[in-house]
Length: 113
Length: 113
Image (cartoon, rainbow over all chains, first blue to last red; front, side, top):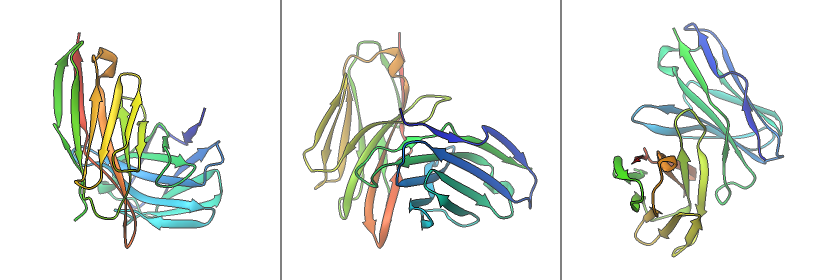
C-alpha cells in the first residue's frame, strides 16, 4: 500500500514565524503535490514537483515555497506565516502526472495566530 | 477562466436508491479527469482516472463516464449504502500555458439507513 505521511496533524504558529510542513511518501513516486483546503473553496493546488529539485506553481503559490531535495520528501515552507494561511494542508503523490492516481496524506491543520 | 462545477452540491438519498452526480469542466486542452471520495476525518481516496472521450470505468457499485467533447463526467452509485456517505470530488488536468489541476467543490452525499 502506498503510504503518504505528513509530519504533524495539528500545528499552531504565530504570525511571522517560518513554518515547515513535511511530507514523505514510500512508493518511489515521481510527483508530489501540496494543497490547501478551505470551506467553500475546495482543494487548491499550491505547488507540485515532478522530480527532485523540480517544482511548478499551482493556483495559489503566493506566500509559499517548496523544497524537494530527495525523491521521497516534499516540504512546504511558509516564509512568514500569516493568519490567512490558517487552513488544512494536504500532501499527495503519484507515479505519473495527469494519468495516474494521487495518494493523499492525512493532512495538517495549521492555525496561525 | 478555468473552473470545475459539480452538481448537486449536496443530496440525501435513501439506502438502496441509485444516484448520480455531474462534473462539468472546460472541454478545450483537456488532459485527464479524476474522481475522488472524501470521507470525513479521512484523506481523499482516488476512485477513477479517466483520459479518453467515451471512457467508462467501474468499481463495485460505482461507475463513471466521460465526455470530453462537451466537458462533463457523470458518477453513478447503484444501490447506495450508508458507507457511501462522503464528499465526491472531481478534478481535471488541463494544459493551459502550463499544467493546471483544478478541483471542483464536491458533491456531499448522505445515505440514510
